[in-house]
Amino acid sequence: MVEGTDKKPEATTAYANAAAIKTWNKSNAEAMFILSSTMEYSQLEYLITCSTAAEMWSKLSAIHEQKTATNKLALITKFHEYRMGYNDFTSQHIS
Image (cartoon, rainbow, N blue to C red; front, side, top):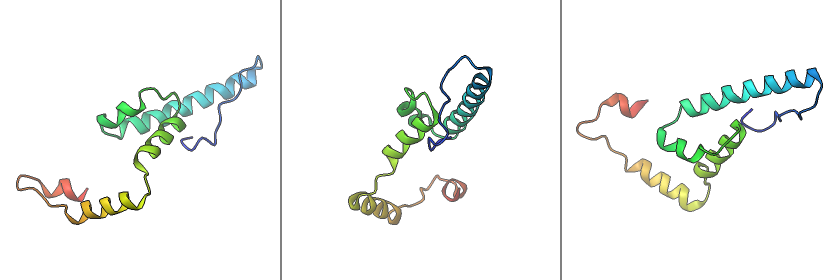
């Protein structure tokens, strides 16, 4: 669903097509719920205009999947400089 391979059926007057649309809408709503309920509130701001799970996933990928050499170096540096704060709990850092 999030990869966009499951396209929404076209609306026609046929009953079978109405059932397919209803099934697709339910699957899309479930995928959107799973995506939105498992991320931080700050990330939801980017997705407020998305109407499908595939659109949400595409937007998140565009924001967070930057694969340039500069970004890789920044992530490696951030990883090696990561330190636990004095008032932090170990469980915050290993999960």
